Image (tube, rainbow, N blue to C red; front, side, top):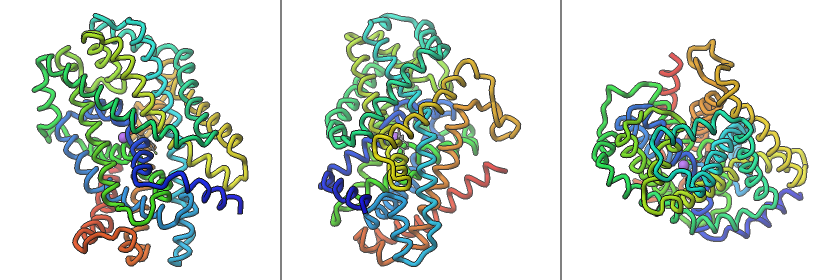
Length: 459
Ligand code: PFF
Ligand code: NA
């Protein structure tokens, strides 16, 4: 069929381990690391939350990433079809396809608000370049940010720009070029983060930030915090959405799934921790609130750029690189739905990108309004669990804290309990003890951890 030919033609683009690492890193490293990680760490009291998060990356995230990549490589198709093929081959129920469907839905919902935040980054390129930040006080920096949030028209403009960037690349299928750019841009982002960390060391509050991030105070950890840490491990590694499955289908046989998964996860984690080390010294030096919420990086980093030499230049560069990081993640969020529309509805790529992108853009408007005109609208507020949550908060919560862990749980159960063990061993080709460690973690620890956290949170 046309679909199969189409997918084998694309296969050729991804001939090396590096290509996989670039695509997977491009998807993983994004706003989750630089925008979300610092603010949820601040909201959840620091150290203990960070420790739980790191545990979730190591004991839940990495095993599931390996399973997703493995399923993708074994199936060699788009996620829904890979799952279907493996299920057929191993005589399993065709309903396992649902894992792919949950993924497509979650990715769609995430992109709708991810694009709004990506728009904030676009807006700050202009703010930094204009020199407006130079020498400003914390109060006026905060005023610039709240000015942006209170202005639906401007938010809509930048949300539209971000979504258009994503749609252009997806529609033209030129992702390979952008992913190659990742190999230059990611190190660039890394260097700029180091620069801000260097600046942060001069504030006199670096030690305070280090203890905040790395000295666990378990009295500050709530069960909601544990769920947030778990959900963020999925979000930041792009798991539970079958995205790594899609990329895994391009990974050549004979390349270590374990090593590449660990490499991607380590890079992602390093970027998040650096972002924390860059931001919290500025928070403490200026008497700001660590739990300030989603605006945290937009209220702290501009202060640093306003004070350091050549700050306008570095600030502009930083936000440009942040856009690239968010862009590659955004592409990986739109791609699954577009592929699904192509395969299932027989639409061509341009039409399916337009349909998916426009729908996502429309939903994004609800998130924009929930930052200003609809800031009091809490659609599910009657349930204790969703109390006080705006549409934006709800989309974030529903995806990161429910859909992604659920998708990940299903992947773990599918690979750990249903796929043939022989097939798993062949794909991973690990030492006996390495395989056992992975297999048992995936079969027992991962599902139990996710279930326990879920159940605690409901009760
Ligand atoms: N991992 C991305 C980040 O940390 O910004 C966000 C993301 C991308 C989540 C792709 C999910 C996804 F499928
Ligand atoms: Na990430």
